[in-house]
Length: 459
Image (cartoon, rainbow, N blue to C red; front, side, top):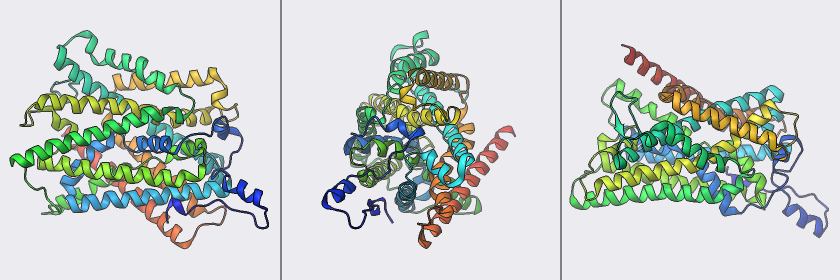
């Protein structure tokens, strides 16, 4: 069951010209209302689509993956990354197959086709909660990296503060304001997601550069004999350590969430039948990056690996030019998140418009509405990043939970079980049930873990 199994339907008894036309027919046929957003352009390249989808997948979550290896061990950790990649491929196959059957060209439209108006509204609210939370966290991390943070009670100097000392112009608020005006705003003003293909390519390149840096450091320390072979299997000694194994599931489940951008990318492809290959290429590439980052990050820091591996690059690594490499890793990561920002922002704006202006003309055709929604969202995210510095707990309760729902429960599994067009197979329904059980379980573990953490802090 893969996305590649999807092929356009052909009418019997057609002539040669009809067959040729059908072969080039869109995988996700165009329709009016919110889907008309994409009608003005359908010439995106395969490579550009791969970069955009890969950028959607690889966000801030990559930094938590080495810590999952510390909990699971290398063998189980790598196996679960591969499993989640295949599960994501299957869920996106559900999206595209049911979209084709209902002639749907949008994420919200698919939910609306199966569950009506209120199902569509529920999905749009989930996108709103998830993406705003994700973007606020991105901006907070960028502020921490560049300007430093004191949220934990201990001040950690940012890159700019380390280079130039403490000044008003490298404080968090001013740095984020300049970043918003000079970087986020221009990138957020593109009306087509394909226009972001170059920034997405650079974002992927920065993620690869981060991986290469970790690889080089790990190889150097291996040669010098200062690292030991990490654990291959989890270290389970009591009931507490057993339950700790399940705390990594939310991280792994959300690591491949990209479903809300699949329709946007497919609609702009020159040949929309390529969306299956785009998905598989993106998932395979990101899986390789995930596995290598997890492996070498855990190899490098061992049991000292922190939940956010970036924090491990705040001390002397015991190699030549250690602090220079630390700064290079942190700056490249901040730049990576800056370039991921518009890819996550794009579907957020479309769903906000569909939620509040469902009967209006397509968003790109209304400059006033486009500017109003874009500027309003940027201001909201900027304020959130400045006045909610401890967003992590709130994000884990809302954003990550909503992401799991977006990826596996609502459109993929729920639409498959609803089966409005009577096209699902028995194995499809069984897999949909597995997705729902896994998602609900992950959410319960996530909420329980955060509740326990809050209780311990209050005590």
